Image (cartoon, rainbow, N blue to C red; front, side, top):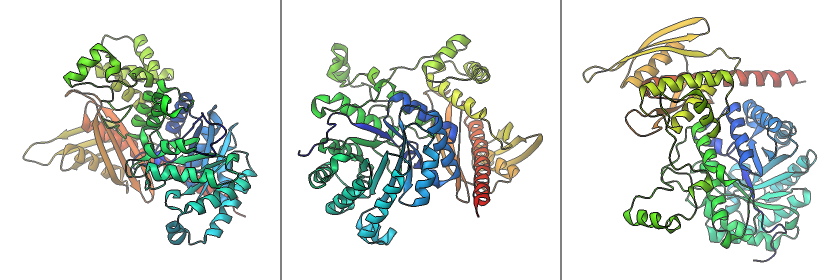
Length: 527
C-alpha cells in the first residue's frame, strides 16, 4: 500500500457514543449521565470524545459545554453542519476545554446533492471550504466529514478532501454513513485517497462506519489497513439505525491481532467491560448475550470438547482473556449479612463513587432487596446505584413522586390500579384499568398527571437470573417533538414500570423547562 501516513503505528480512537450513539431510539441521556459516560471514556483512554451536536438543542449545548469544562485528557469535539451558526455555536460549547475540536460536515454523494442539499458539486465544495476556514478561525483542531462518502464518486471525494485540507482541516473523515460498503471496496477508497490527494499527509484520515449490513467493524479495519489513523466508534456499537462500529471490537481486534495489524491504540482495555455496562445501564439498551467482547456469553464454554480444552489450557478456546477486557467472570454475591464497609468497597470496584447521602440511600435499598431475595449480584448493585443517582439529581422543576401503588388482577376481570402521587405539597390520587397491571398503572398515572405525552417505547429485561430477579424497565415518552426516557429497576416489575413512567414524565418536564429557558435566552439576544 503506497503513500502511507507518517504516524504509521498509532490509531486514534474517536468515541461518538454521546453524539451518534445517543441517536439510537430510546438512548437519550441527560447532562449528568453524559458527564458520567464522558468521565469513564477519559479513563478508558479514548483520544477524542464527540460530546454532542450543540446547535441541535439547548440541552445538547449545555451537555457539551459541561463536558468541555469538566473532562480533561481527551480532545472534546462538537458536531456542526457546514453552516456558520452551527460552527459558532459549536465553538461556544467546546472552547472551555484545553483541547477543543470543531467537527463540521456536509453530504457529498450525488443522491444527497440532488435530493437533500439541491446544490452543485462545486457549491458543496465551497460550503465545505468556508466552514473549515470559519472553524479554523476559532481553533487549530478542525475535522471535516464527507457525509455518505461510500456512495460518492472517489474523484469527487479526493477533490473535496484536497480543498478542505488546504483550507485548514487537520482531520478528514470519510464515512460510510449508511453502511453501504464492504471491506474490499471501502479499503480501496481509502487507498485511492492516499494515492490521489497530494496534501493527504497534512491531515489524519478518519473513518466512521455504520452497521446496516453488519460490516462496520470489518470496513473500519480495512480502512486502517489502507492508511486511516482515526476510527470513529461507539461503546456497544450503539447508534443510528443498526448502529456504529463497536469500540470494543475495533480495539480488541487491533490488540489481539497485533501480529497481523501492527497498530496500537491508547485504550486501557481492562476498562472496556465496565464502560459497556455503564452505557447499557444508562441507555437501557441491553447488550445481546452473544455480543463479541462484552456479551454475557463472550467467555462462556458449554460444549464438552470446549470445556475439556479449557481445563487443559485456556488458550485452546480463548484468544483473549476475560481479564484483558475487565470481565470479572462471575458476579460477586452479597446478602443481608453483608456490612456497610463491604458494600461501599464493592461499589467503588464497580465504578460508583457516591456522596454520603447517596450511600445511605443505596445501602438502605440494598438491605431491603437482600431481605426480599437470597442473593444480591453486582448487576443488582448497579441498578440500585443508578436509581439513587437519578433520584438525587438536582433539578429546578417540581417533580412527581410515587407514594403508593395498589393493583389487582384476575383471569375474569380487567386489571385495575390505584396510584397515589405527590407533586410538591400536593397529593394526587387516581385509578386506571388496562389490559394488564402495568397498563392499568400507567393509565392511572397518565390520568392524574394530565400529561398530553404519548408512551412510545417500553422495554423490560431481567437483570439477573431466577424468579426473584430484579426487572429493569426502560420507557420513552414524547410530547410534540420532545422525547424523554425513564428507567427503573426493582423486584416488582409493576412498581418498577410505574416508577420508570414517573421518572420519564419528570425528565420530560425538565426538558420542556430547559427548552423554554433556551428560547427565552435566544429571544433576549435578538436586536
